[in-house]
Picture (cartoon, rainbow, N blue to C red):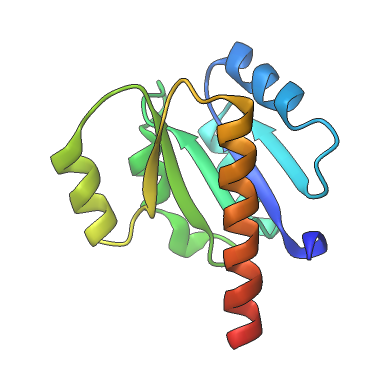
Length: 131
């Protein structure tokens, strides 16, 4: 189940990326951590990633703007924003337009993050089985 599941974290804050790395040490799936939208876009153009968790506010572009380019990525990727901001109308419209699949509130605990990732992994397995 885990062999086909991979996650990318995109956040300009190196402290948060390090925290995510520590939280996910030893998980049975592949994790990629990027601090730059440009590098993340290049990676997604040539590597399969099941799930992208992108910070909403970044200097290069917002996580929402980044997810709008997912048609150029190697495979369909589910996109979620990580945000401490509460922008319900903006986020709801992005979900309705299928740009993102949802928003996770920051800060997020290790148990919340692991539960979310395992849920996403399970849903991917079900979708792949149904296809």
